[in-house]
Image (cartoon, rainbow, N blue to C red):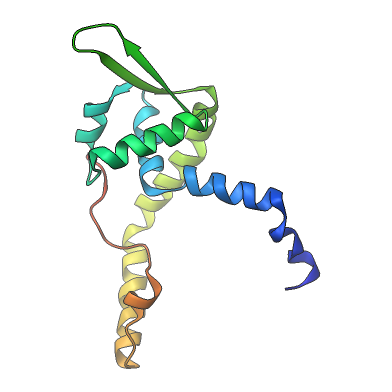
Length: 146
């Protein structure tokens, strides 16, 4: 490792890495994108985010709430109504998350073509590239209609 990269081992870098893991994971990005338009109820979000389980939505919302990005409001009705919305800190994340989402949407086909070309090269070389490297995948996860 060169001298200029030693900073990547610092505690500050590890903290940033943990934070980016939270706000950059697939479900958190989609939740922030949905909440950018205003408060939503749990089941409304579950219906809108294709492929997310109830458990994963619960864990993601708890993590975002713990990090101060999402607030949870319980209304004393029968049955209780719970709304989730972005906090001021969460709203400050909207612009970069929306930009990331727009970038992903704009480049989905280009990335798929790059993956297909890579996979073809690996097949020609007798390697299984997709299985070894992961990649961005081609699942149909995301907000419906976004």
